[in-house]
Amino acid sequence: MIVSMTGYGDAQTSADGVSYSLEIRSLNNRYFKTVIKLPENLQFFEPEVEKILRAGLNRGSVTCVLRLRNDTAAEYRINPGALQDYVNQICAVDLPENVQATVDLGSVASMPGVCQAPILDEQRRSQYWETVRGLVQAALEKVVEMRQVEGRALYNDLRAHCVQAREHLAEIDRRSPTVVLAYHEKLQTRVQMLLNEGEAKIELDKDALAREVAIYAERCDVSEEIARLESHLDQFTKLCDADTHAGRKLDFLAQEMLRETNTVGSKSNDAEIARRVVEIKGLIDRLKEQVQNVE
Image (cartoon, rainbow, N blue to C red; front, side, top):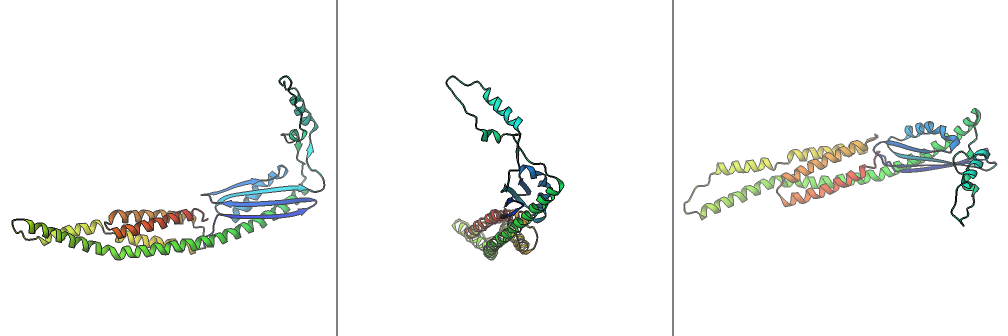
């Protein structure tokens, strides 16, 4: 069954006096795109985190954010030289007369180079990675689960739209032959009326009338378009049922269905068929909107 690209998952844990909080958000995207935000001293884990995300998700815009809080002691160290240099530069600024300024050390400490992340040895890196990997996998499982739940809702909605489109298409198929018959009768009645109004009685050329009706029938024949629409609807529902990533194929089929429906509307000279075409186009527009969120 199809899977949505919308999902959310989080995970928290504590280890060695450090609290971890990780969130993963997934939104629709034509391709697979990641935004990974890790603390400065753990940014070298980004490629490994992306591998885990890519293995679990096929498409979507995925944001992964990890936050740490050390409950024992501060791991970051202040660089006194950098801090003093910033303070000296701020104090050296010429201010207008009667203007006084104070230096906020908290703001200065957040400037680049003042707070330095600790250097992790190999053992510490391994410990951090085991924790981060577990969090990513746990949060990713929640994302996948939510995407599956959303996918079931999308599935029901898409199938309902397809059923309605089939009903309108069946009515078009039933009515289209009667359009030619109605045109034949209308043309015959009109020609006979014109002949009766004339002074000379001219016999109606039935062969010419038949040729005119045949040309009209050929011009407004929509049987091929109806057959292709039915085929597209069959493929669409099969892809919804299949256990594959079908988002792009469903989007393509929806575009093809809209093209065939437009052709039916342009070839049919009948108010009822035109109304049914408008209904089908509305359903296809909803299909196109919904499949944008299918993985």
